[in-house]
Image (cartoon, rainbow, N blue to C red; front, side, top):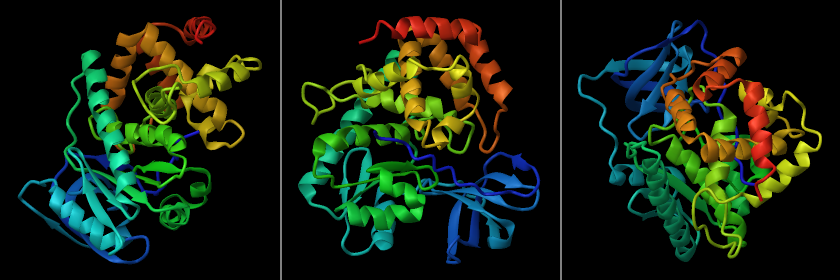
Length: 358
């Protein structure tokens, strides 16, 4: 099944992180490969020891340790997001001469596969973009248009994908056909011969990208994985009468429904609590599949039966600060408070409702 690879890069800041108002700076530093870089952007978080979280003018977030910083220079001018032309030029310089840029209304797609395939991908992106904004507008939530060009990379084949994705996500690349990367803010996939197999993946990962670029979610804040994955699986459901298409948002996800039904036969009493309190079930191969299935089921239940409360919950999550994590009790308390019910009562209603879904 398509999955957001949990790619929150673990970088240790010594001392407490200081959440601060953003400011424009030009920072020269050495990256993880000891290459020297100079990035103009906003310092989102600064640690007491001088480490920082820097968002560049192309939306990439750099987690920089103090010993990697060569020079910092305050810039009085505000950070202006790089234009589509500038981002395109940077992509081509980074990826090499075999790549081209396919621009759509809202996306820049760097590709080295055939143009007919990337055109299909671009059309699917734009269809999702329209539907995503319409869906949330109907929930009385006017999301922000992205400040930065939305970037995707479409590689020509699986070998090319492995070479590229290995640098981002390591061995996880072996088990996925696409992913959204939290730091670079890019979505990456490849020319999968079976288009039907790739549709759900493209929608799933592009949903993550939109959520993190429209004010719904904030990168590196405390975003419970059940929320992120529940949203993506809610949006991804293909048209089962024509698996090569994606038609609408919120159809019953038959794959996850089947997994959910198998899981409930032996579902532990504390299942809802463990799903909400932390992300551990997503990080184990033994429990990840059922965690995705329960995330879809819980999201479906909440949108269908407690839509206003669910949107209020998403709004409160969207106000989180980078690197500020809630404790397990805090996550559960927040969920119960916004939903206006205890976890026990919510679980009973959840189980009852899902028995009728088909």
